[in-house]
Length: 430
Image 1 (cartoon, rainbow, N blue to C red):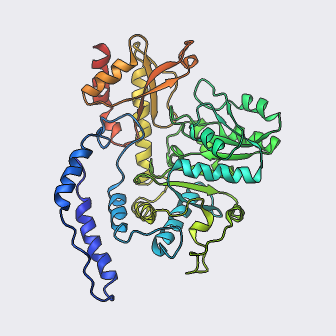
Image 2 (cartoon, rainbow, N blue to C red):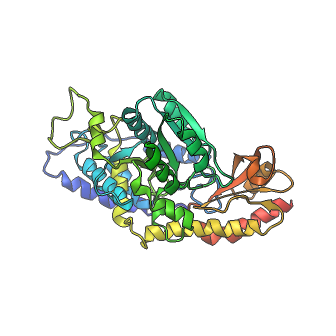
Image 3 (cartoon, helix red, strand yellow):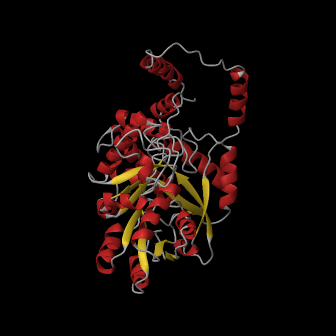
């Protein structure tokens, strides 16, 4: 069941890459012995995994990269470029600039500053670091349903942090935020477009309206949900939020989620290119090969894998970030899958479903019995779900609720909702 066309494409590309260096004197690389037996052992070890590639894996935010990303990443490792400086990654640095510009254009930015990062955590750290320099000593605020990384990063940056309450749909509450803003000590508000637990989309238009009155920076954490700006079947509230992303000060998106990339590949973008002056530093050993700006001069990270940029560039070459294109249609399919599962749950008296999906994540809990037992029994039937602890108020209960959760981020999920429901129905009855 595993895709296996990649090795053939890689073999052809490897021969083509070898021809690019044909002018060099002949050189024989050391022979690698014992690879076959070790790789067989590696495969056996990797078998101790959940089947993230299969539609019956409907749990966490995990799926394989696109075959072209897998092949391009592997091909780049024969060069092993480092995108810190052009000295170590000339071609891959150019590919990174192209790829990042395409992502910025997807949000409506032509002028921008940005680069790839090791993941959403590092990308968010850079955005909050810039906010801390432009609003020194001011507080960072994010929703109580935002990713825990924001509080952790604030601690690393030695900045005060506060959580704004979320409403019963998992979205930041603008009225509660305004009460906090009146103290005048908030420098940056994080708006999450696609929370980890429920895929909820914070009301960005209302947050931006508050920025006009109180003068803080707005950072959009779209690590999970950012690519859904291309989807044509969002609800009106989510659509309104994505349509205002261009008005934020900074954006984070993770190509290693819906962008079909290997882990880890995050991306941070700034609307104002002048924030690049905040990164100014000296290096005694790099930045001498070109007068063109090196990516390490606008990044907190030093060594960064050029292979990640090559894989992302290749994927967008095959699947452009265009509304109505194949990439966008696959996002829409994931959302339809979530709406279909939610519709079945919402009309079944055995379940409580507090939130209609805004993206492609569904949460629910049984009215009676144990979510943990359903989770365990479903896994025995090869249906892999996830669990999340959510506020009891969302379910009309006093105490925190252990809920079931499905991230339906593979477009194939749309065709498998019937089978997923069949297993879920069986284990719930059991």
